[in-house]
Image (cartoon, rainbow, N blue to C red; front, side):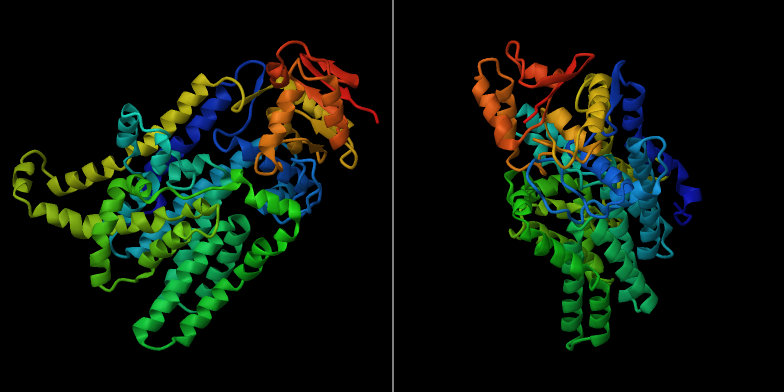
Length: 542
């Protein structure tokens, strides 16, 4: 750790990080059961089809996302632009699933790089702190690996939700990497933004202001939730600068305003404009769109030793008159997470680990390790190892790693034990849905299918489905119950016909998952137009 961190010195750890994040995905692809197709993701299965749909729509020439996961008529909106653009620029080879995962690898590489650049900037001429910060950013986690098994043994209900370091897809790098690729891109861009804004606070000049402004705009487009975080942190910093200088520092305030200006139209668009669509409003207020942050005590467990080290570093950081931006990043992020004004404020957790781990590195190197060296037992510990100081550092860093390892092991276990939906889809289903996509007219047709097929089909066609992605299906739970009742043997034919008539359903899809709902034989109305490999499709003519 005597050399500054760089790719040349860090590449073994880069490979280790990529292996931890990507090996479960590679294993899932390699272990695909005969007759099945790997879905392309091990997390966020519900949203994955929306990403594929956005890519297809982008390739078709759209710039706004057209909603076809529900029969209601939504206005097209600026949504998932990174996937829309990806669909426009990638060649029509490999398939969209492969391209999304290529994007995942690129985003992970960019994030590992920006963590190195960030660590060098915060701790110039301090290679050991650079390494400590980078290792905590990349591999660090909380105490979920230790406390979750104990909570299970104690019978604590829903105990996994108490430990965000092993469950929350926006908390630590390993979880973010297995989540949607735009989460990782959002983390990269947020770190890049604060790297530039740090330079602005050090008087770097207008080039850094412009770079921060452009990065903020890119972040707002790719992960709009954290536009709110940027506003909170920058505003807190500017207010503090006025209090500290006992005047309004107009240059700093002007720089901050110029940096945040690109986010204003985006916040207006998502905060007001899209809510003019009444169907969108139903999506926003849906109970399924409630994403709360972890309880404060869960955040403590999720931070674990890293949180303790960060707390140890805060007082000294302030006392040494270090740049307070790190402190305001944490404070601003927590404020927007826990002020109860947005029902999906749990999304704001993305990026909070960066200042936390950075302060933890400072706390470990400048507070905790020097303090431990003064203890009486340190001399005895020195008899056990020729490098007691470095050994203590390694032990503490190793204790922050297990949660990341457990996440990888959990994913591998799921791959080994789960041989069907949602990790895999039968080839017969995909073949039938591809056939159906060629037959339907997006302007007139509506497809009735159960969730697996209903969620997958919009990735193939603009034709609407009765129910699909649960955020983007109005009254998802109600529609699920109706589909389940449709396939019950004792449901009257008149009820089925009324459902078809009410929603103007034109195609009925009957595959393996619909058959699993049937308690007895159910023959739906309509003309049988497809019957292959256990999948039947019926067409309803008015």
